[in-house]
Amino acid sequence: MLLDASGSVIALSAAFENLVGLAADALIGKPFARVCAPPSGSAAVEKMVREAIAGRTSSGQIPVRRHDTTRDLLLTVDFRVMHVGRSRGVMITVQDWSRAGADTPRLGDMTYAVSLRRFGVLRWVNLADNDSACSELVGKHCFEALFERESPCEGCPLRLPHNVRLASVVAGPPSSGRRPYLTVASKIDSATAVLSATAIDRTLLQKTFRIETERRAREAGLTDRERQVFELVLQGQSTAEIGATLRIATSTAKFHQSNALRKLDVESRADLYQRLL
Image (cartoon, rainbow, N blue to C red; front, side):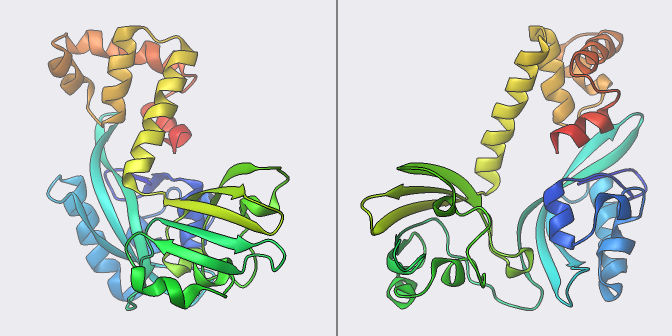
């Protein structure tokens, strides 16, 4: 999510819409603290946002309301100051979340085998950071034990047509506190499938974002210098800072930025952040 200098929402991802249970139209242009924080915590969230925009804090925990349930969530976030036009804003990246006031267990990366005849029943489980829970999960449905769902996950690779191996993204409900997982399923015989699930965390997202931005730069035909400017824009640097980093005049940095945005078919930095989000 991207906030402007006043703390109002100007861009957000679909994942954040799902997290808070509100569509983009209900958030864009509105003060983040007022529409997202619970009434009892709005003042504290507003203060934290001001601190983040001023560059005085780079991470923290923010309580937010789930508008389609009675549960509040506690988000663990990173803040990064961004330049939107001539003003400063801040990019909020959610690293983790849990139910406010609850200790939601983290299951980490995992490998597990399920029955295909008794769909999703766990035969064995290997959890990277919780060995003690493995035996307790055997015999339960994977979607219940691992993702707190009452029915199979929408993205379950075993529900998609394939013969041997397929990757997909699965997750519990946003209020469960479970991270989404990149899950790869392999059928080893007619009765059993083995799945490996890797949490989609900050490291994986950074790698994915890097690959996506490189693809967009290549398809847009950016020159080497335009690509350098593009990468620094994504880091939130102003044109003056880009000029200093690359040891070129600010006017030259503006020229390359303008060309890069035109080739990427966006009108402004805010538009670029919205597209990439």
